[in-house]
Image 1 (cartoon, rainbow, N blue to C red):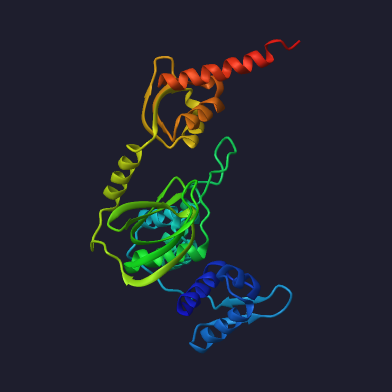
Image 2 (image 1 turned 45 degrees about the horizontal axis):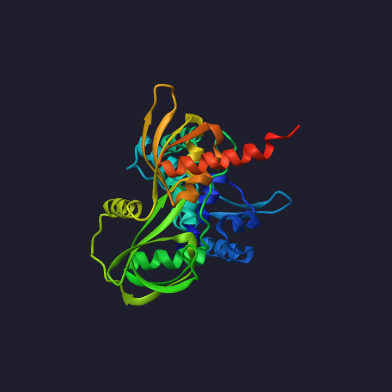
Amino acid sequence: MRADRLVSLVLLLRQRGRMTADTLARELEVSTRTVLRDIEALSAAGVPVYAERGRHGGFALLPGFRTELTGLNHDEALALLTAGSGRAQQLFGLGSALASAMRKVVDALPEDHRVTASDAAQRFLVEPETDLLSRRPVTDEVPDTTMIEVRRAVLAGRKLRIHYAATDQTPQWRTVDPIGLVTVRDRRYLLATRSGADRTYRLSRVLAAEELPEPAQRPDRVDLDRAWRERCAQFLSSDHLAVQVRVKPERREDLLSKAVAVRATEPDPDGWLRLEVTFQDLRHAEWALWQLGTDAEALTPKSLRTSLRNRAAALAARYGNSA
């Protein structure tokens, strides 16, 4: 860990020039005292780092100190920098590792590639915090300590003990065999087996986790994409409500955010979209469609249309006699 930190410290000084110990400490997520010890270690190892005194002082490297990696062309470097510009929450607790890796990539590029790739990457924005309607995405919050334990168990192939809070159930401890991690629309899932049966756990509902020393019972190789498709099919075939709905195109994302899944989309002649949407149950579907008002219409099942009509009639009756 210290070796990685020392490399990151050198790269920060290479790319940003003079930096104070406090700024370095914030970037590296360590104490100022640790930064000062690292500076001393670098100097002892022959790295040309020096201190500039005074109000605007700090630490810097002598000009010309760098290494080059010539194996990446411009587009390859641009792809890495663009991929690394997304929100770190999607990276299963690897946000700080990504930042460190990006510093290494930028610093190791030849000078002409480094400048042009960095400038080009500024023209791309991946998954901003809000959309055009100023809505912030709903991102699952998973404590770093929990994420680290889960990730370690997945990569090491060891059993995992989790304190899991399933919907409408008292949290319970469960021992599972982890298979892999999946992120979908800022929601993260653990694919695992429990007593040989497939299980999918939403990581935001994992209250605590502990990697166990016993090896997990799982195959050496896994097709995670195929496993995820199978889990999705199994989930949608369980006790959920399928609804045929028409919705204005500009309200599609509002509907998507409320539904369990949207399985098909096709345009109607009038410009509206016809969707096959999955909800948890009739009550969930009624609530979601009611939020969209006249911008959506439930076509099937009949029970949903009836409940929405009754709800609208009751509301109309409540306000029908208003002056």
